[in-house]
Length: 421
Ligand code: SF4
Ligand code: SF4
Image (cartoon, rainbow, N blue to C red; front, side, top):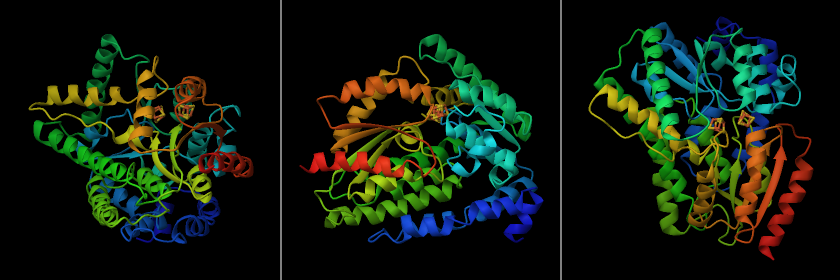
């Protein structure tokens, strides 16, 4: 089946979809393909982006025809291992496009985080085949904006909401474990597949392998000169949320093999004195590449992301166990190690940033918050205070539009000049 036929069968608005995708090839060529000295193994990821609404959507559609279900998630706390164990698909759908923000604003307040408005807009506009192929959205009670948006989204697509606690005390951990068990029962009901020690162990292993591959890639970035651009790693991290986990892990490992050689030979994508930047803050969902592109345009290199499109997604593994009960307990434990600003207190995130800055030999930390994101915006106070006097620090606020690019670039350039001085 051709892509267009598939999109029609998924009830997409083809004219609007054409309009949305039209600029992508040029943008991707300018930002990615035209860069010199990219690893050859980026070819796979380039091909996935090149056909971003094609191959993988066909796969998901075929899975559904064979009886599986597709579950869309919007947060790294949702345990994809459980879905994968049943042979169904879990795809991360956070959206990072300005194109759909105005549609989202038809139902949502304008002064709401663009990530939520963009996501809603993709569903209203029917231009995301991943949304269209999904049977369920799995929401969660993280920030207030998302929590309330699920109620509206539920009118367009069935939306299941996981109740995530706001603190990490023993009683919160217990509540979350119960929530994970209820979610597991929901997935069993929906997929008509029982979780067994065997299939759940396989689900855990597949997702752990994916996370391990991403960890391996992240740790290669601590070398100087940096063997890969931050922008390339960002796109890989973004694809991690919806590619097939087994194939994806193999491709990331193949890339790491190539980078191992680069490191051994002292080959980098930037000179050894290029300023090294650690980015922290809100996630950068596909296709939002703005900040990485601006930072690397100055000659600096992004060496790490303390974000959910970075370290927070893959830094912890799910411990294996012998039986389903213990496996579900371990599945519940892993995400509670993730330090999202939706939790209070969230001192662990400050420790993560400090550790990453040191481990990655960063020269500066850029803390970037999406406009109207209250949890990360408020938490910037603690991030700034912890960085003060230890490492150059810049706080930025932005959205998905191109309007503030000049202003952002000026501020980033000033930081880079200060580092170089
Ligand atoms: S920033 Fe927080 S709410 Fe957003 S995806 Fe990450 S963990 Fe979930
Ligand atoms: S970026 Fe902030 S406001 Fe937006 S969805 Fe994530 S936590 Fe919520």
